[in-house]
Structure formats: C-alpha cells, structure tokens
Image (cartoon, rainbow, N blue to C red; front, top):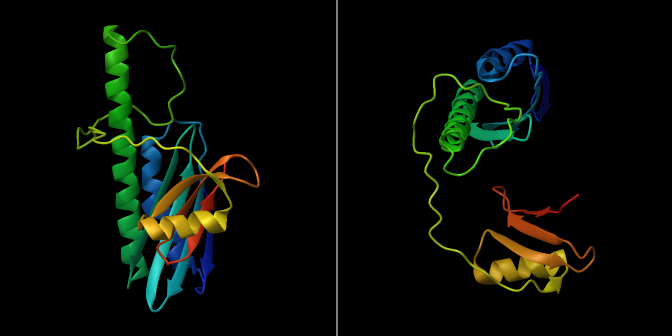
Length: 185
C-alpha cells in the first residue's frame, strides 16, 4: 500500500504516520496480491476533536471511512474497523452473487477481476432490502435552487437536472453543515 497522509490543523508526526500505516496496512490481507492500493488519509483537528478520513480506491470499488474522536489514535482504530467491516460486507455480497451465478439460476457471467480476496467470508447483515422506490420528473435548475428545494423538503440530499450542464446532479448537506455537489464526469 502506498500512503498519502496529510494533516489539516495538525502536524502529522512520525508516530501518527506509523500508527496509520500499521492499522490501515492490516487491511492489505483482503486485497489481491500485486494490486497496489493508493491510500489517501486526511487528518484534521477541529474544536479539540481529531477527525481522520481514509479513502482507498480499488478496482471498481472505493472504500471510504471517516471517524471523529477526542483521541486521534482512537479515531484511527475506529476508522480501520469501519473499513474492515466495509470490505467484509462487499466480499460477502460478491460471494453471494458468484454463488448464484455458479448455480446457473441467474446465468453465467464471465469472470471479472475481483478487488477483494474470497477467503474467510463473514456472513453479516448484508441483505439489502429496498423498501420504497420514488419516481419523479427532473426539473432543470441551478445548484443554488436545488439547495433551496432540498432545505424546503427537509432532506439531506436532492437530485436535479443541472441547467448549466444538462446532466443529472446531486446536492447534499455535509456533516459540517455546508453543502456539496456531485456531478458526473
């Protein structure tokens, strides 16, 4: 794994860097050999609390976790546990899909490269149950109007057709109270 560790309002000491590499580096056992992972780590301190955000882009999957704690080392432990749960959940979901394909019930699939190893699958709560589907017309609007619509509805995100680009975009409320915009490439 190649680590890119940076700090905001905090100096990343050698001890912190080593601890992150040790804890997050343990996740490498889940990855295929020969597939280097570029791990992006951002640490920041805000109002006395340390926040760590870790992003690991893999083949077709992006693992991302963020944790906040008064103790930065505890936040690192929590984020490593969260990433491991995500990997196991993804791996279990993949295994179930491969089992269904192997029985021929859904149809044969060509083998595709898998970013996560298929060993010691942990069957935890992976069943995804969609309980509601909404359909609606996308009204062309700019991002500012979409944020106002989202706030009026009391939602944490809003899907809209961006009048500037004619693409489908999403605005969302961030944990810090500000807003984000997701646009396709």
